[in-house]
Image 1: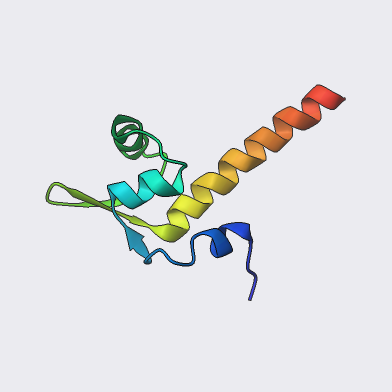
Image 2: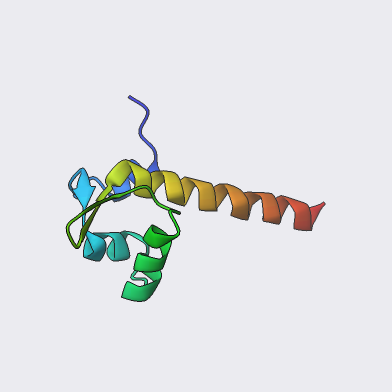
Length: 79
């Protein structure tokens, strides 16, 4: 099994998380920022009534994408 740092960091979270867990997973971001990420479809999710459910793997995919962008910027700066 391919485990990465995010799998270890988030192993205690359920497979589907709510907005508060999402905020925790993203370093304690604000409620408005979290809703903004969902409404802009930056993180895949489902909306059930007025509640958002976010697959944990989608949060991890979002973080990996952000990490890749940061790595690219760092590489560009040192070249």
